[in-house]
Image (tube, rainbow, N blue to C red):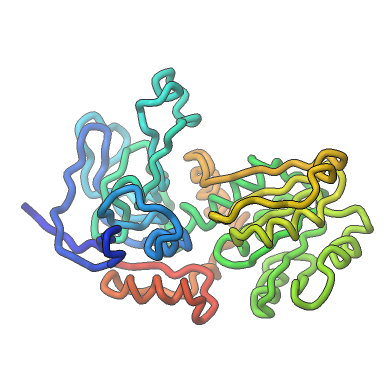
Length: 346
């Protein structure tokens, strides 16, 4: 049986090691992809440090991936060996009520790649054929990989979940791997003004370069006063927590204007406390939870990146080998070097 190298995370001892394991065989409706690039996401860090509960006792992480089709399983049409693809980082359960009625995009128990089934911190990965999006030759694999979460998650959150429209004001808390793309997406759809909030001077400068109109240091004074000044006293139409902390969420909520929306993109186990409920009720505020994206969002983004409408060419901070994946996780966790996205190249 052919083997490959893969990073394996053991939930019992919280160890991440690169091991030799069998190359998976694609079953009916599945495709085997030779991995060319896979990003390291903060949710991977949280899986490994225990902040997010493990779904399996042992798993190969990695859900931001791109590669080349190696083989197609029985019943797969439209995909041939050699095609360049990005892979959506989840699959439907196939068992819930909505899946049973053909409403797959409304699956009630979505399975997350790298959590509920083996991901792409490996030389090969097996995925459902519907997870694939073809990638043009001129898009580097590193960029195609990060589209499948670091770009797609804020895109789906801002554009669809929150319905951000041209001319609406947007405040973005946390200009890291998700936040920098949220800035670019908000700019692309015509939001105005776009206000980035981050304690890091480097992150604020990055936000302004990416298209934010203003950048606010939360440690330098009254954030709400600064937001009101930049919005003509009306407050925000949309405030987005891209960090995943209740303190950030509460601060963002306090900057909303009437009928404003508060969007949770960053993951947190913190209890949600947003202040007096009467403020939310009287002001007509909305709190929106958000996770991931749908497959069509990945298709749309590949088109936007391919056409030059969305520029993510500066989003990859560095690349590393599969054998150095644990070092990459540590670098992201410690924010050493202030990375936007680190990408593993097997």
